[in-house]
Length: 104
Image (cartoon, rainbow, N blue to C red):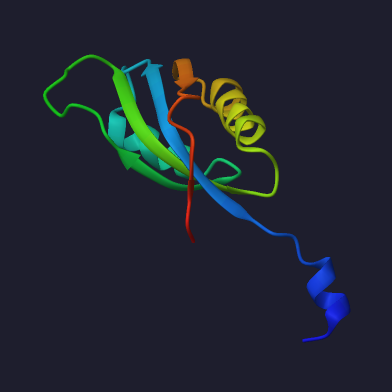
């Protein structure tokens, strides 16, 4: 590989944190929401950490993203995308305290 190509490559880093969602359960469940969030830009992995016994329309996900930007900025973009593009989502928050870098 030539040096010029190496210099042009951007370095992606992976970060993870916890996301809390409240949603309209009339036509959505936690699994469906997780599948939709997996399609959001920057999102690489969504793990469901919700209590399976809780009947309320809320979800707790551990979300991993791949980004070249600072993690807080990237998670904010994911949050905003979820709030604006997924009409069933009523509330979306992420934990700044739990942001950590994941080794690829």
